Length: 435
Image 1: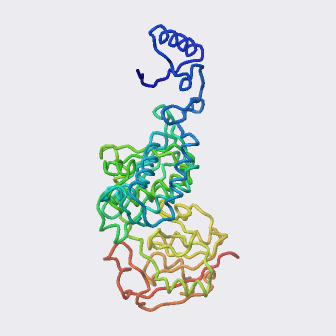
Image 2 (image 1 turned 180 degrees about the horizontal axis):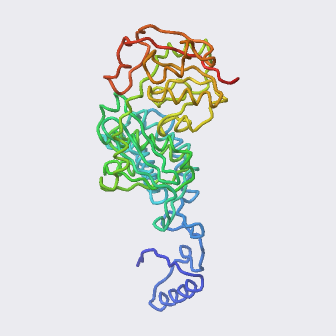
């Protein structure tokens, strides 16, 4: 006769007492106990049902031998271009069996392999391994030893960071709730605009985690979305390749920053802040053509910082943006000291006056690009009463009605989106370091 496995969890004395009673009950009932498979003395770590249960650390892990067996199977396949459905099923089965310890990553990173198995004609038929399937094998080969075991009772843990995300037709957004409530925002390019709403919502999650990875590092993060498909895909992946690639990227980011990510759905009414930010339209994400930048970077550079940029138009690796966005070095250029930079400066028109004052305040240097509008409010900040440029403007170049000087941003009707600009443009070399 066979009895299902089981174990008792309590303090040492209670477990010891229960062990004695249970042994006596089994003996008096006439059962013969398999002593080799029994653990009668209370312990805080044991192997049970193929897992290592560590009550001291509160985690479920995989026994060393089980990991070694998987490592051998993966190694035998990762350099092959063909494999049988039986071989693939053996690897996928071993990985899926670890889901209880490692979570949904076991399903997400076996999607392509599972689809190949489903395409089999018979078990020993040779199947061509796709590039995506090989990527999954490489992932397990490289990360088997670095995956973190799951906490046994995660519902007792309070999230250390809380995030709300959303996406509209033209932008992705997110709110990181911490001491300063950081805001993430990214305007979509034409490719992302053409994708499904689920793709854009998932893309917003991916970009937010990459952007704020350092702020979320080694943290238990709770992420909320009002799109149920996003929650499902983050948890188990997708059969659609573009969505699966995003799920793949999200988990790679979590591994890179050691983020323990938990996702949950919320009604739209409880996601109103992220929804509001996603509807923000950045009319000032136009930029300067790359050939223009290269010319002045050789002439007056090299430039060390792009003060007013976004992930879609930055010219220097170090750049400041309006919101947190992929690759940004900081939010709000006016919150940083420009004194140590040779800056590339292309501010929105309404910030030109403030930019000039801050350049002088920081005693900074850089190249400022402005339209030559002598009736604009910023014009007296550039020239004196005699119409001469201020002493801090040490050089300049004027482009008269230039063609293809600007690159259009999201607002296709902007004056900066026209091929020929409707006025002259000034490229001013500022140096206020001696003022």
